[in-house]
Image 1 (cartoon, rainbow, N blue to C red):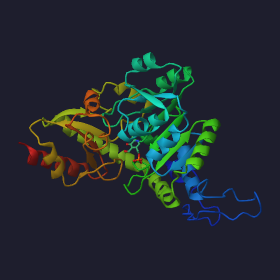
Image 2 (image 1 turned 180 degrees about the horizontal axis):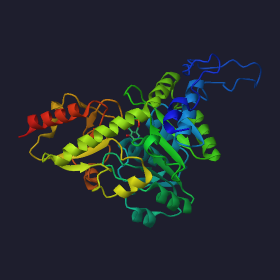
Image 3 (image 1 turned 30 degrees about the horizontal axis):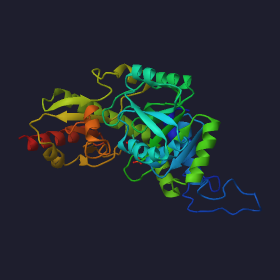
Length: 381
Ligand SMILES: Cc1ncc(COP(=O)(O)O)c(C=O)c1O
């Protein structure tokens, strides 16, 4: 089945009880048991709920994995995956991971004696040089947030597997429509379902997909033990959002191309970060492992433009945290998504005070470009 068809018919979209073409919202905490140990596959809704199961089966099929798991947020998904590790374990992480992922490792797991080291995974030589048998896993985002650095999932997987370490890929920015990390050798995929998968900025959710029976059993145990599950209402909404993923992504990408064209010709934009530009240092890798470089653009404005004034002058594009919704959202990583990194470190890796991140929505691109042009005009000093 083609991916676009799987989006609509994958998982368990029809209710087995009534034939309803949409999976109902099973708003229940428990299920009647006919006798001790006799049930219909569901006992208690933290462990399993049919609406959540439909979503979990769907994401497993889309990512071509063994099993899917749905959580109350992307951070709940990442926290649960990190709970696979023990005191004294070490993992490697990409150097501009989402601020919240860095924060949970630095401020929470480190207190329990589980440590991390940071590496620029976009330079494969760094990964080769630093990897050793002390590392139990590597956690990467590709593209990275917000600098859109690209790492080679296939080669990183080969390096990590040589040391029996597992490869965890945060596929939030790409979605399985554009990139399939498990097919490239990764062991676990995580998502903030809040973003492109949900697609409408109306829910917060997280997803995990595993590549093997053994990992599935361990994540299922942790999901039930830690309990950060996604409720049935949000599971329903996420299944509904996923149905239009391909259509939305195509439009996000079309708009991104137009905005990149405009940015490339504008003297007001001094730096542009996007994996589809042939000036991007790892453009070749994106061509190899992904269908497209996605719909996130980071950029810096000329120094004669007041950044604050620019952001507040936008009328169509919304200044807000988050990304991947139908509406275009703009953010200032240094003070918003990446504020949890120390300032010196942020600057070292290129997240300057001037950097702006744009999540290109599905509006008409001419309105987006006009909005940016207007805000630039208003904020020149
Ligand atoms: C790449 C990435 N991973 C994980 C998260 C965390 O997801 P959530 O906000 O759903 O907890 C985010 C949130 O912005 C993100 O951008």
